[in-house]
Image 1 (cartoon, rainbow, N blue to C red):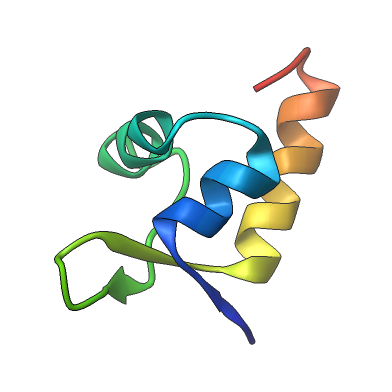
Image 2: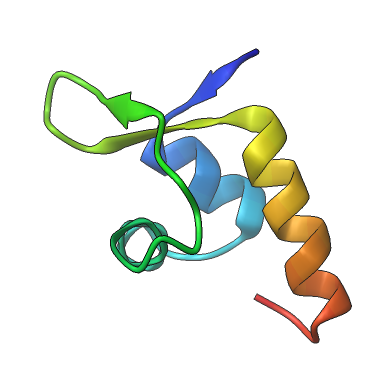
Length: 60
């Protein structure tokens, strides 16, 4: 299980960091914890599943 920072998730999903933080706040993308700066940290598998689901529903 690999952890991804907010910045890494934003790059992977091709969105802004603010969008990733909003997805976490709205529980659309579940954070597994926080980094030293207090930003959410995500599981890579969860992020990949979210991207696949978002594509099926018409985009992120």
